[in-house]
Amino acid sequence: MDQKTITKKQGEFANYPQQPHGGKLVDRVLRGAEREEELERAKQLPMIMVDLEAVITLEMIATGVLSPNEGFMNEADYKSVLNNGRLENGLVWPVPLSFAPIGERNSQVIKSISVGDEVALTDESSEPVAILNVEDIFDYDKAYRASHLFGTTDRNHPGVDSIYRRMGDVALGGPIKLLRRVDWGPFEKLRMEPKETWKLFYEEKKFRSVGGFITGANPLHRGHEYIHRNALEEIDGLLLQPLVEMAKREYTRHEFRMLSYRSVLDTYYPKNRAILSPLRVTYIFAGPRETVLHALIMKNYGCTHALIGRDHAGIGDYYDKYASHHIFKDFTPAELGIDVRLYFEVFYCTRCDAQATMQSCPHDERYRINISGTGIREMLRHGILPPKEIVRPESARIAMQGVQPKGVDENNEGTLPVGKTIKSLFPYYLESTRLGGPKRQQPLTVEELTARDLEAAALDARANAHRIYKGVFEEYSFLSDTNRALQPDWIADAREAVRRQQEMVIEDLEQKVIQASDEASDEFMYQDKAEAQKELEVAKRILADIPSAMRAEDLDYRTWNPLPYHRYRGSDEPSE
Image 1 (cartoon, rainbow, N blue to C red):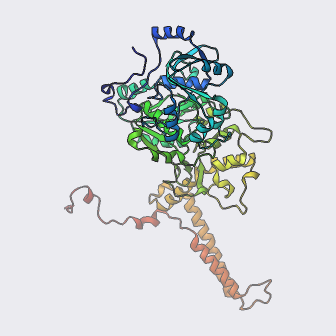
Image 2: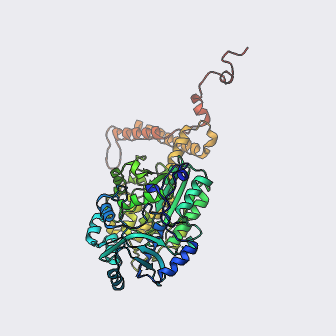
Image 3: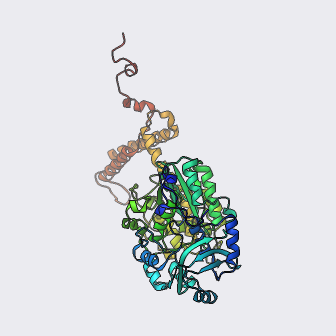
């Protein structure tokens, strides 16, 4: 078989509800005898050493994850993507695939080759990974790439920093052939290539729609789950792809993130509709542009829908809070070829007793526990299991084992100041004394909060998150149940006791008013009639405020329909 790009015949995709991006699913993985021959030939070619990020990108290209790209971009496509978010032929593609090797030895090799040559790309052990057919050689301007892709040249931006650390001054463009795939270790048993997911979705499971969900450094939390469950109400299946490898050390390690996903999926998700498969992809930190890339990756895996959260692929304060939503206004649904579903920030409202967004919940921050991935990681680092309303314990217990570096420093600080952690998860805490509680006389500041405040906020959430709506319901139920067998007698007993006691107070005060003088002989020792009368009026108001016991016989008036039930069950004519 020719191992160049396999252009799928329309007939092979005709019965599928989706098509690969650009109409073809790339396969540049060499197999069998051809692979053995090319491996031997690669050892005779000029060699360029590549890092792990490049190895991952090579595998993504070769297996069709980045279809229709067959290799690294030439200069025309590279600049078109940076300037317009499209390949030179007009097809949407948001992030350039460029290859500008760094290092003195690599630079010498690049100087020795010309367009039309082939080079072997090797890993750090000098073993060939792929062969690149050089079709273009062009100058690589780091500042130009950074400013167009990230909107900044600030080295504090991790994507910008990566350009200057990893990339050289000359780029090579051309198609690649993959010679060797890297074993994914614990993820090998879960990994799936696009060609496998297409078959699974549409031939084996007979789905007609699939929602894709790509997530990064956080364990599965209830915000993710909210999005998944909403999607499952109308979509046949879910493809959940946690990103693995290339994560910063302060994130939850990817092995534990995958295990936290598996634990929750096993217990709370429909097993035949939710598919978990890791995605080994390089972090670009390109914010909204990376969000579009992820949508196209989902499309190449066969997904008909892309599920996008509030801050998908965001980084710090470099992008607007909803930049990953706004960018989709730049592309029509037809040219994207995937139904993009945008979700607002999810939080847990204790008054609604549900996960919600600002689109569906009217309540303010007094009742809110935020679902912040960063805040959740920091709680885990402090050794505190987050509230069950924002992370299921099945997920958090495992994720806590994979937080790096573990624990906090000698000042009880993690990678994020504890005050920011509290504000990110418990926004009410700075203004209110407790969930749904009164305002503090003096609001707290982020800077003065300590680990003790984090503990207090966590305990408050554990004790009261479920009680707010429960208390509301109990009040409604006591006032509404005409079947009083559902209500405890002790409440009615207590109310009757309080009324009797207050009636006793009134009886004595009435006698006091009768006996009181119009003027007191000593205002510090005695009351005059007017003051005693006021005291009696207050006591009577208190009696009026005491709710009634609401015994069954007190509620007979609520059942008043005069027609017997046999009239509803059968004929409307009176029985003889």
